[in-house]
Structures are given as C-alpha cells and as structure tokens.
Image (cartoon, rainbow over all chains, first blue to last red; front, top):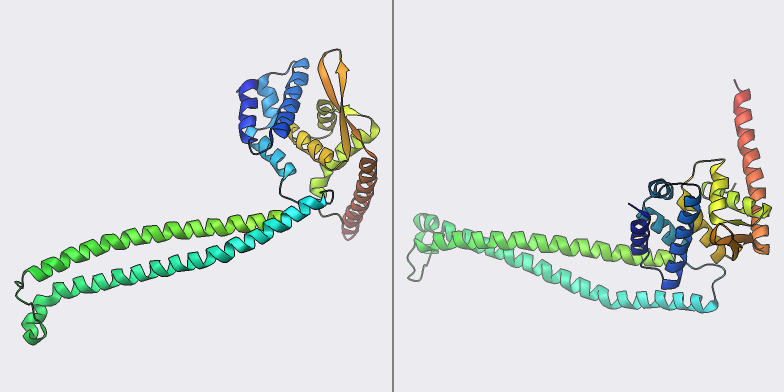
Length: 191
Length: 107
C-alpha cells in the first residue's frame, strides 16, 4: 500500500465524520507522511508505524465520539440529547406492541403448522383405523387409498412450511436482538 | 487511585512534552518514541481530543523545509490538566512502590 491508497482508505473509514473534521484529520496524517519523508522513511515503514487505516480511523472515531455529552457541550446539545431520549421512548412505545403482534402472529402460524401435521398424520393412518374400527371412518365416497397418499403429501408440505417458519423466526429473532442492542448502545452513548 | 491510568499515561506524556515547549505532531510522536514503543497513529486522535476539550490550541508555523507545520500549545486549562495528571501520577507511583517494597520485605 502506498500513501495515496492509505489516505484514500482512511478517508473511506472516516466517512461518518463531517467533511471539515475528516479533511482536517487526513491533512494531518498527510503532514505526518511529509515529515517522515524528510527522515527518508518509505511509505511501507510509515504505514506500519501508523497502523492499519481501519484501526487508525476507529481510534479517531472513538475520540470524536459524536453522541457522547461532555461538560463543555452547550445547553442546546444537552436539550437535543434529552429530546433524542424521549423520542427513543416514544418510538418503542409504538414499536413494541407491533413486535408483540408479530410474535403472536408467528405463534399462531406455528399452531396452524401443528394442525396440518395432525391432519396429515390422521389421513395416513386412516386405512389402519378403517381395518380396526370401520365405524370411526367415513370417507364420503373418496377411495380409501387416496387418503394416506394425500396425508403424505400434506405431511411433506407441512414439513417444508415448518422449516421455512423456523428460518423466518430465527431471522426475526436475530433482527430483534440487533434492534435491542442498537437502542441500548444509543442510550449508553447518550448518557 | 486513578483507575483510568493506563489510558491516561499517553495523555500525561503529551501534556508533559507540550508543557515544556510547543511542538508539532510528528515531533511529539518522535519524542515519545524515544522512551517507549507506541503506535504513531495513537498520538493524532489524542491531540484532536485535547483540542476538542480545549486543553491545547494549534497554529501553523512556516517551515523552511516544506509545508507549514501544525504546532500545538497548551492552554491554561491544559496546564491545569497537566498539573493534576502529574499529581495523580506521583500518587500512583508512590502507592505502587509502597506495595512492592512491602511485599519485598516479607521475604
């Protein structure tokens, strides 16, 4: 990696910062290169001394920690933070019932899958039941052989639905965890 | 005891250097490197933080050898922070030394 590549990567990783700050940082690091050249250091040496561009960028981002309140911050910034926290509270007030509703819906889908399993299973064992206790079975004109076949199809179909449900639920769960983490992080940063 | 001490050590070094005289970034890096191995990149974020917390100010000074250099200078607040960190460091040093000597005696 040469100086230009390093600086451009650094620029990339600093994209979260306002233009002026980013520019300031990049020019200071560029100065570091310039001074190093006077001592006849190569780009490689300089870059090794500075560390990986991503790491350097993150150490800048850490120090700059935009959301953290400091004692020197204006009262306006404090007010801003308070509003952000209130906003967070309201957002969750609305979103949590929505999450809950989705959860309930997912649960009912699982119940439905369970019922389908039951149905499939019953259809499959129908011929057996017909042999043991013919009074219990009323096929309503449908040839007895079709029922277990239908049952197998239903079971196969249900199994796939079940697998898909599991996948969706897992994804939703991961998303929910990430969401909670982000909110907790925001609160942590605000305070 | 200042529990943030590990983080503060570099702070102390930089403040101490600037207390002595105004320096430009690369110079500060080199001065510290004479005494300990650090990541050269760690100084610049630190200087930015100092500037944001009003502990230092910067100014450009023309240099014959090339582009103008960005010099850093301690503010009054910076001097106060320096004094406080020096006190913390002395207290920390003496506590640790005390602990070490006490434990040496027991043998």
